[in-house]
Image 1: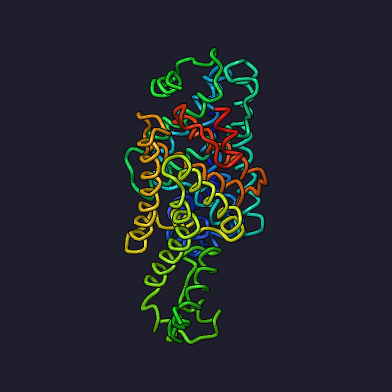
Image 2 (image 1 turned 90 degrees about the horizontal axis):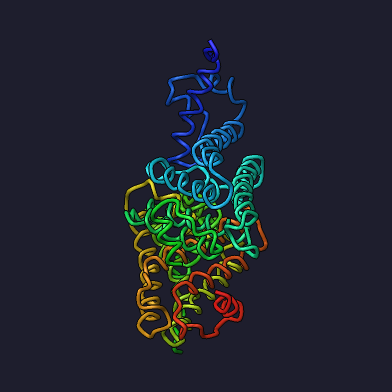
Length: 219
Length: 219
């Protein structure tokens, strides 16, 4: 057997993490309590403590778990595409897909956590910042590669691009979740096309997703 | 005397609201409790209840008070400028100024409240949505006027523009408050120039704020 069956302890840890994810998506990381998890799973508090030594450790584990799932869905599949705009567009399309089908219905620990921890100090904030910087760093790297291969203009500013792409996703979260605007996903796709179109070299106008390609042509 | 002195009751109400604003900016609207306010102001809980019948009423009063201050700082002064891009740019510059000097240091009830209430139902969420829609509506109106007077292209989509401007501000909040990136304000200004530049007619390239004008010229 290539993949050994997880131990009972590992299974319990996994169940605790899943319950914590569900609570954190709805109530925020600050809505997480060891007591709340224990009640949800009909476990004792000390049973939860045995796997996560403190509430902070649990919050950090949730952030790491969320980041892993996010990268598995959004980033790693895009690495199979050629460097440049195909990869950058795939990252965006995967992200949009995840927001549409996972984060809009369930909430996003990164979006709510950014607001919960922006005024606080400590290890949970530090981890939130670290995973955020790591993801922005991967987007930046993908933008730099797109400049290198000539799909984006040489004078494009990758940090500016990341700032704008992140803003598109935050606006999508806001309009889809708070305002429940069904047109938000299409607007996000249009914005992505414009943002990339602003930096795209003539060579960079390669079709990928149909909607994005139409925007590039219009830009 | 043109402006009558506020009554003692009005003064107390004002003190309660100020304390509630301070707590809500840091801890979020859900961090507000009647007990917390009473403790901060060394009042009895029943004293606070006499002015705000419930925690929900207090949360709604904070949203209304925040919205009034926001519009006084950002929107109304811009109405003195001519319709079209001068007014739209003034709205953005006033907004940027407020974010930079008020919201980045102290937090923003709209940004945190959007995340706190996106999964909840009830009158606080409803008020949050209403004030948000009202502000987005004013931006939309300013964009429509800019189309009418020919500063923006006739086929510009004002809803798309509002979506993108809101995203710029959310990204600014995120990068300035969570990541503490000192370049976030300048990036927001650059994004605004690009966003407007995408829709601007040749006639629309009128200088207003120097930085925004430089971006328009580059767009």
